[in-house]
Image 1 (tube, rainbow, N blue to C red):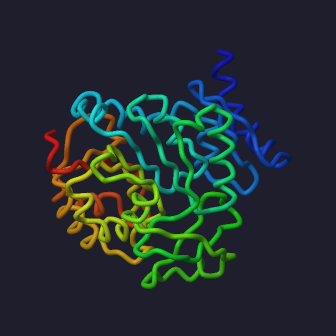
Image 2: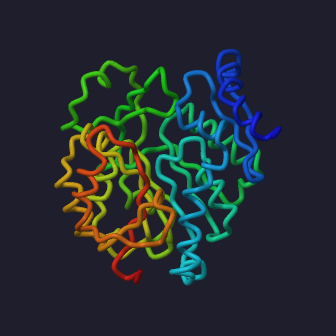
Length: 292
């Protein structure tokens, strides 16, 4: 009974803390996370108020690897976390003990500070490496648009993006690398990468497009899938579906909580099902050299 009352009070506690405190410490499955509260996103509120939801994605992916591709644990050494936010995915996956090294990549200077602090707080500086950069279609610098109301809703606008509201946000220049350059900087070959987590607000397709050959014969990929963000980034449902089909033959929907694969041919239908303003879900894309 006390637990139920506590859970009901959590949103009220979050509201109080987000009003008076800039950050709060949360303990989840032996993970210690420092979360920003002021100007924070629904993502952080969910981590604070419904803590068990935080581990659903990482547990699903780790269970799939252990069940269907256990050889990854022995043959691959590294996981990439592109758009790592505060580092919670890298830290949670580290607990699964699948790889020797985890690389958290985050361009936003404020969030990158939290990545470093959270990794240090959990004593994981030897296994999780931090890189302050975004991943895109060229090496150099690009513009990060920062949402002053939502701590993690920071966007890189592609040349063909057309979201006028975002263009009025404060801007900051951040480093950008291609996936190939990122691997080179980390002194990693693609055959050593077992898993990529990527969540970069709809720009995922630009990374996939630039690194098709690398991904086609490479790691499994877990990505956020939001029709709204994908289209705001300038991509159509057809473009996304066609490119994904050319790289991965099938995928899993993590929110289904089962291990039934879907053909990538059905991605366009998934767009239609979710709708433009539909919820964001997580997909696990599997290369052809893995069998479902």
